[in-house]
Length: 302
Ligand SMILES: Nc1ncnc2c1ncn2[C@@H]1O[C@H](COP(=O)(O)OP(=O)(O)O)[C@@H](O)[C@H]1O
Ligand SMILES: [Mg+2]
Image (cartoon, rainbow, N blue to C red; front, side, top):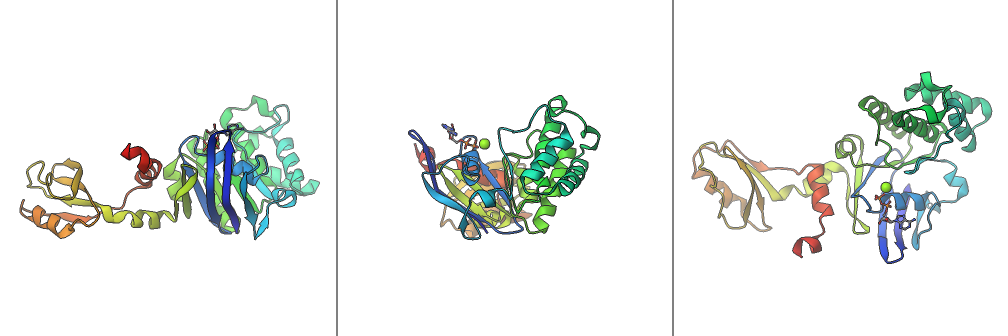
């Protein structure tokens, strides 16, 4: 278990983290989401000992992370950290050795990961001569080649083309299957939804929603009704008590119901317009969940 427990961190008056807590089980992939500036990078830097928490700690199997454990973490920092003059294969080998592999194992790992991340042709090139996308792949290879026990990756997919996205996704899923917990931050919610067992949405210094995506979607599902009434006049649902029309197009209507509103009264109103070809709760997408979670209730009221 990788546990982030009660992390607090302020920079001056800026209270960035105010009790961030989540757990990542072995073999699971955790998508760490949040708006720009929410504190994702800060959280990951605290795990790696690059920023000091004001309170709280990060534990691995119950033990606070120390240098020995951190050596077994494959970490991809937001501010990428490669040696521009080093050649690709050397670089990956070097990092694998820092993570404790002996020389032959490190060069084998470098060969394997440069191949798998599409860098085979670039092994002898200096890092500074690569495109940004390829530098990103080298950075990923350095995180993966040390046979990490844990992966913490800050925006690993940003800047990759679709082929790069696929090979990274496959590599991460494979690490998970081998029991490695993976935490990555991303704005690409479609990817997060596709890859992650679990997501956490960071907002206002806390994890405001977390859990498996289908569960989060179900939890919020009892609020939005989709009703299809092909013969109804436009605006048929406006004025129903406790009902807000989210969208309406040729009878295909999305309705948000206030808590306690009787859905059967909505059905009766729909039937009065003629045929009802669809009537059911609609689960919000992860994007809608994200928007909801990030919009602070206090800010909405203000
Ligand atoms: N070293 C620092 N000094 C001062 N403020 C910082 C520092 N690092 C991060 N911050 C502030 O902390 C907040 C969270 O930043 P960050 O963790 O980078 O967010 P995210 O990765 O979610 O975009 C931002 O307001 C940022 O300006
Ligand atoms: Mg960041």
